[in-house]
Length: 193
Image (cartoon, rainbow, N blue to C red):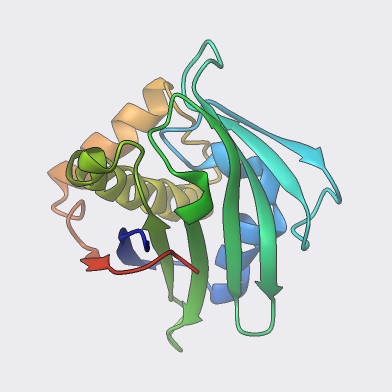
């Protein structure tokens, strides 16, 4: 019997060259807490200190560290700026780990900006939570890309739980830039690949 899953795609134009965006997203793989307003800490668990196939990180999503994911780079194409990130373990996340992964991508827009994207394929456990989880994932992925844009423009960290993270998101909302992203969600049949 096949399992259905959801595939969500979020993209946002980042005011930085593609190489800088790729370096922050993948080159500094263990440092995602520098720009994600949902990640309180992120640390390399094993492998190189730079983004490479097999490198693992652990991300904590609350101050206590009791809600976390452990992730690994499964595939990496630096030339085309595409990376597959798999969730290999999680605490307090309703995810079916066999059917949940993300594809990170960066596209050079040719004008000094780039488009960063997440394509997140996931199945929740229990499955009926998929709709609720999709809404939460949509916000967190968009806000992570907002944090990335701000971090690359200013060098200021947009770490989970920080006053700066709240301020940055508020500023983007007030400037009318919060919703400047593209979003797509589709329900897929069969196991995620």
